[in-house]
Structure formats: C-alpha cells, structure tokens
Amino acid sequence: MTLAEKILAAHSGKDRVSPGEFINARVDLVLSNDITAPLAIKEFQRLGVNKVFDSKKVVMVPDHFCPSKDILSAEQAKTMRAFARRYGLTYFEVGAMGIEHVLLPELGLVLPGDVVVGADSHTCTYGALGAFATGMGSTDIAVAMATGEIWMKVPPTIKLVYHGKLGRWVGGKDLILYTIGDIGVDGALYSAIEFAGEAISALSMDGRFTMANMAIEAGGKAGIFRVDKETLKYLKSRAKRPYQIYEPDIDAEYAKVIDYDISKVEPQVAFPHLPSNVKAISKVGDIKVDQVVIGSCTNGRLDDLRAAARVMKGRKINSNLRCIIIPGSQRVYLDALREGLIEIFIKAGAVVSTPTCGPCLGGYMGVLAAGEKCVSTTNRNFVGRMGSPKSEVYLANPAVAAASAVMGKLGSPDEVVG
Image (cartoon, rainbow, N blue to C red; front, side):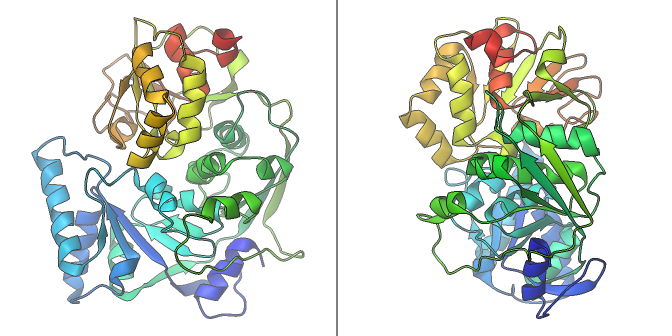
C-alpha cells in the first residue's frame, strides 16, 4: 500500500484498502472556520444530536474575516464562538489565533498518521507532517463532528519524485507551481500526491507545508510527505500526544510516478487566471504591479517572511504600489518581531497586518479594484479571487513578491539583491 492507503486502512479497521474502495474512516481532528463553521453548525443541529463525538478533537478558527470586518462577519464569528463554548470545543479567539493551516501544526494539534478533515479545501496542508488531511463540505463536517467518522472513496496515489539541488531563491512554492504547470489543475484529480526525492528531503518544513497546501490546486484529495529527521525535529517541541508513523510499502502500487529534475528550475510565477499558467521568472516580461501580498496559509510562515526580508532589507517599496505583509499566526508575528523582520518591512514602506486570510479570498485587507495587478504568495489566482473580476493575480514565492514590491514590477530577487 501507499502512504495514504496505510493511514486510511488503519483508520477504517482494515488490513488493506484499495483505490476506489468506499470506507468509513475514524478521524483524529475536525476543523472549521468562520466561513464554513456556521453552515456545519446548522447541519449539526438538524441531526438532532446533543454532543460532539470528542470535544478535544473539534477545532474552530476564526481566520477568514476576523477581526470581524463587518456586521455579517461578526455574526458568523458569534455563531461559531457560541457553539464552541456550548460544547467545550477548542476555539482560538482573536489574539490567540492565526491562519488555521499555519496555527494547527504550530501547536502540535496535527501529528503524523492522523486523519484530519476540515471545512476548507487547503486542509491538505497537514500532509507535510505525514498525515492524511483533506477538505470536505460543511455537511460532511457536521457528520464528522457528531460521529467522529467520515465516509469516503479511497483515492489512488500519484508519486512525484524531485531530483537535484534547489537553486537560489527556489523553494517549495516554486516546486509546486512547476508541478502544477506540468500536470495541470486537474492532473491529480481525486488523488493523493506522495512527494519524494532528495530535493524534498532537503526542503524545510515550511517549504513542505507550502507544497502540501497546493496539492488541491492540482485537483488532489491530499498531499502527503514521509516523516523524516526534519519532521521529527519540527515535532519535538510540539507533539503532546503519541502518534503513529506510517511508511509506504516498497512494492506499493501507484497510479503514476513522475520524476522531476529540479536542478535548473527557476523561481516560478503563475499568470492569470490559473495556478497552472506558469512561467519561469526569466520569462515574465515587463508587468507593472499595483499591489504585493506576502502571507496566507501557503506562504505566511517564518521562513517566508525571512526570505522577503532578505530582499527588502535597506530598500524601499516602490511608490507606485502598496505592499501588505500578513504573518500566518501570532507566534510567527512575534518571532518575526524578535528577529527584526517587522522593522525591516515597516522601514521599507510595507504595512503589516494581524494574522488573517484577508485578501487571499477577496475578503478584506487588500481587495483589488478593476484593472489592478497583484503579485501574491497565496494559492489561487482565479478570476475575481482577490477582488474585481477585472483584476489580475500573479502567484509567486515570497522573495519574488518582495523583489516585485521594490521594483514596482514583476521581477527576480537577483535583480534587487544581485
């Protein structure tokens, strides 16, 4: 069996599962946010049950529109807050919270071998820790909150093997954009993606979270990494409960195996309006920019802010654009503050926000007007994703985004730093 199949078999009480098989699987964590929780709560109440399956395993994070941007978002948060208090759930109030997919691994709430479901498509982020994590609709989440189980079809697994050494300014965002550019936004449709190879072993945890996060942008059901020394190092101070590490069998059957030589891969940019519309940074041409966003559940971690700060240090944001920096959690914010990164950003002329999803989904803190162009470290650049349907979003890594902020146009960090 593959890594995903091993985890799903263990959680469904079976010795073996196969792609296409329907199973009931036990879950270790159920997640929702201020957009999706109210819908799940409504469906939960329709079930007629009077408790959740395990209050310690249901987590709610108000991160999309919080601190509340308007009356409607305040009502959404109020509904979630009241439900969490009534049933004793884990709830992160503003001041303690962060972007859900940054916060949960940071606090050790997701561990290797877990099955995690969330009412958010980027729940697949936790696969970086060797967990099977996937997004589901609010109705499924309501049932999971009530029963502690999910019903699903076992996905086939596609194995992606990355060979070679990462180039300068190249990280997880570039590898996953390069991959999506190759296989397309439906190249891994309803499949688990198993990431492997020496380039993956050399990748930081923050880079792995980025890659797992965007598995859904290739249509994936989950994106998953094997647990190695880097994973264990990350977990050492975070894990507060036992966990099980699973390994794929040597003779595991994969739907497809794709090998990549990434030694010559440059920083990548996804042009409007698909994450698969990818070009190398040297091929982007002359594109003036109105806004730069550095943050999100894709690239709002400390390594991401460090990369941006290396480019911005001692420089100024171009006067023709605005740059918004959004740390992924309060801890990331505090660590960045202690390291002097926040000072670098502010001196450069950027604005630093409280942790929030904010502009990623066209929520607030950076919505685009018609005709505006934005370089963003987020995960999607669909029509109207960040505001006006007549705006354009270019996806890039934090160093490219920072360089673009300094230059006033889409550009390479090498053009700024040298």
